[in-house]
Amino acid sequence: MDNDIISDPKRQSKRDFLKYIFIGGFTAFVASIIYPIIAYLKPPKVKDVEVSSVKVGKISEIPNDSGMIFKFGNKPGILIHTPEGEFRAFNAICTHLDCTVQYKQDMQIIWCACHNGKYDLHGRNIAGPPPRPLDPFKVIIQGEEIFVSKIG
Amino acid sequence: MKNNSIGRIYNWFDERIHFEYILNLAAKKYVPVHSHSIWYYFGGVTLFLFIIQVITGILLLLYYKGSEDLAFESIQFIMTKVEFGWLIRSIHSWAANLMILAAFIHMFSVFFTKAYRKPREIIWLTGMLMFFLALGFGFSGYLLPWNELAFFATKVGTDIAGVIPIIGKPIVEFLRGGEDVTGATLSRFFGFHVAIMPAIFTILLGIHLVLVQIQGMSEPIGLEGKPVNEKKTMPFFPNFLLRDLLFWLIVINIIAILAVLFPWELGIKADPFAPAPAGIKPEWYFMFMFQTLKYIPAQVLFIDGEVIGILLFGFAGLMWTLVPFWDRKTARGEKNRFINYLGIFAIIFIILLTILGWFS
Image 1 (tube, chains in turn green, red):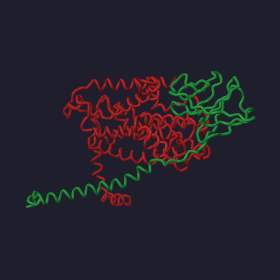
Image 2 (cartoon, chains in turn blue, brown; image 1 turned 120 degrees about the horizontal axis):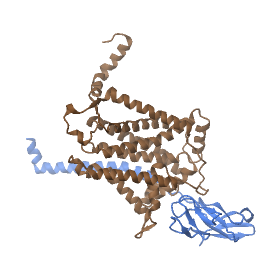
Image 3 (cartoon, chains in turn brown, purple; image 1 turned 135 degrees about the vertical axis):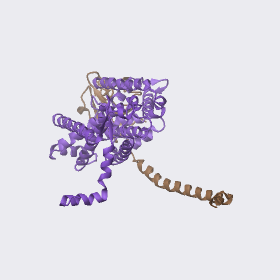
Image 4 (cartoon, chains in turn purple, blue; image 1 turned 90 degrees about the vertical axis):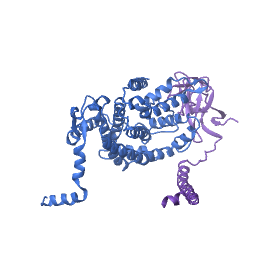
């Protein structure tokens, strides 16, 4: 008798209808739990501190043939005082894998210690794994003071 | 029936738990004895080291503070002010490394003896997932002291994930909790390390251990056909368990010696505005991958070398994990030398590149 009920096409379509309602409802239920969790895991966009120019220091603080790291917003920058007496500034984040570069006095290059990446004093990648040059900043000297600003 | 007070307490529990049932199970468990039996001990010792990690981890949790401003100082406090704090932390660090070593040995022994074959595919799969989780424990735990080496190692390690096509960038952001490695990354890694990963690990470990009980210890292929009365076995309880415990005792002594004579260093506090220090290296178990990436040219056929490296390692890891499903020869009960050669190649590759990385 049970078989008769199941094989009755009307009953069958009713059964299918309930099945789809149930599966659909259950899927929606699960999705309504999963979605907020996934959305929660995605970190919200925090506004970067918008900086276009920073004061790095005084000329007397940075001797010839040396470099220093400064804060440009919340990213590190590097200011180089070349042996010839010029000031140049770059974004200090190595273009390879995100390490922070430094001035290497004995070779007169900008050097990344993580994977031995080398840049010349114009920020051009000359050896090692870095794929691109360092992004340059503009150096402005007003009297004794050194300012660094974004280009453009 | 015992009638003294201890006996009464025993009886009270026995009526509810039925110790006989459990003892019967233990009495029926036999461990095969053959020339490769020694490898049976490495699963147990990995479990033992995991238990040490749970205990010392919980102890560290009582003083550790997972924030950018306090993490380094709180570990300093543990190392210098808290009684035996230096010991607990050193044990946690050393046992972590030994656990990964033990897991490596356990995994390779199962691979070479083809113990992953039917009916133990799920045991192998859960084991591999736990192995990857163990590497994740290592990577996330490494950052928690918030020192300079860990900070830059995490920058590099997470940046590498970014080279994966399409999903790379969202993965990096998910791992870092933002675009850069910051205090947000530390909070995240702390959460992964002490809550999310232990929870998943415990479930996998439960499945792994229950299935080992159901299926019993795997025997080498040559031994399987032998009649039962020609096979040598050893009762698990107490014979094998006592040998297990002896090995654990030796391991805990090794850890104590290492922790006392070579306490884990803390280094200097991470400064996001300092140049990366020279000689940053990943932990030894990531070294072979890191070193391989160095040898791949920057560009191979217009594709970044690192992309190729990551995809190759990803593919190799996936194939390794799925070995019970493509090794048809072993499944048919035939010898498969290819598996042996593959395993030997993997071991030589890992050891060679680790040494090269260590001295570079």
